Structures are given as C-alpha cells and as structure tokens.
Image (cartoon, rainbow, N blue to C red; front, side, top):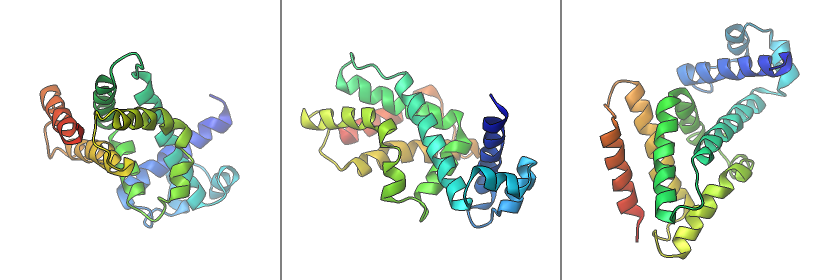
Length: 189
C-alpha cells in the first residue's frame, strides 16, 4: 500500500468509527482529523468536502461488500442455490464486519442515500441484480421490486448483525440457516 492510499484508508477508517459512534452530524471534520492523526488540510487534500468523504466511504464499503458476495458466487448452480448462497454470504459479511454493516444501514436511512449515490455502485451490484431478475422471470421468486428484496435480505442481515454485535441476539449457523430459509420462503413463488 502506498502512502496516499494508506492515508486515505486511515481517514476512511476514522470516519467509519466516528460516524458509527456519533452519527453524521456529530462527526466534525476536526474530529475525523484528530482520530486519523492528520490535519484537516490533509483530509481536504483527499476529499473535497465532508459529503464527498462520506460518499467515498459508502462507495468503498459497498464495493467491499459486493466483492465479498461475488467471491462465492457460482453461475453454474441453480438460481435457487445462487440466491440462497447470496443470502448466506450477506449474513456472513455483515457479522464479520459489523462497523461496515452499521454504517451502510445508517447511510441508507439518511438524506445522503439518493438514486445517484445508489447508481454509482451499479457495476458492483449488477451480477446480483441479474441473478434476482432471472429468478423473477423464471417464476422462481415473486416479482417484487428490487428495493423490497434488498430490504428483506441486505437490511435484515445488517440489522441482525448490529444486534448480534451489541449482544442483543445470539446467531449461530443453525439460526442463520433458519433465517435464510424464512427469507427464501417469503420470496419464492
């Protein structure tokens, strides 16, 4: 990792921690600079504004999430198996990355989340959307809007991961598989 990407990563990590602790409005650039151990000027060297920094953090986390999901993606499997594997991988990613899950969930519930910010990540999401679209066309799952399917899968996994991280729910492989089965039963035609 070169110095530029290292500083960017440190700034993004500090931003992630602080926003999860204090929210968007409670996280000033001066706090981020202090947490990252850099000057505010360095932050503005890499990011035009706080909004730009937050959007960059969201985009990097979505890219990381989608790369994790696509790592286990196998087009040779049945659509049902592909979708169930995606559900499982969504849970596993969120459980392994509770800070990322919390930030993504918070971002999606904020005014920062717009059609434009969502469409910037389309290239990473396309293989998953394509799989879901095929399953809809073949009558394997209900023809629900993609947003509804995302809420039933991504958002449920993120919320449960957050609750798990806070010690409010115990999640083991058996329960995760049961939850995946419930989601699948809700979506299948």
